[in-house]
Image 1 (cartoon, rainbow, N blue to C red):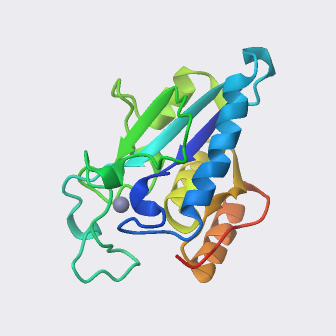
Image 2: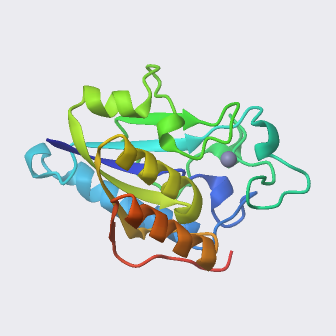
Length: 199
Ligand SMILES: [Zn+2]
């Protein structure tokens, strides 16, 4: 039984000043970095997580996910284009001691980290199983979109799944509330209070 922390999409474009900014994104990046710092400084036997991994929205040509007239439901302004500054991790996310980084959404919407692949080509479910991970804790941006999709997939894949809401940021209150409901219904454990702030 091993535990992994999954840090979802803490990227410049999803934080204040980015192309698709989520209110509270930069503060969430800072809070997650505090957790990563403690993890890194602890001796391996004392660590809360056996592994820490991250996902990155990494768009090349994601089709209707991008629009010049986005509806903010299924289409969005261009964001996190591969190899641009917008796709980079936010500078508040320091350190970045990730055992794997999963890029997702090259040619699709890629909401879920489970659609991503690591540098070695493994998908997230296979990577976690290869490392004997049974429990995952999910944090990051945005609660109502990529955190939600990643948590639902984690539960569907049979992982014991927790979302730590204090370390998330949501786009809007109604979609965040709906996401909390969907995650709870799927058996995801929710801890802490959701963060939703105006961008
Ligand atoms: Zn995207």
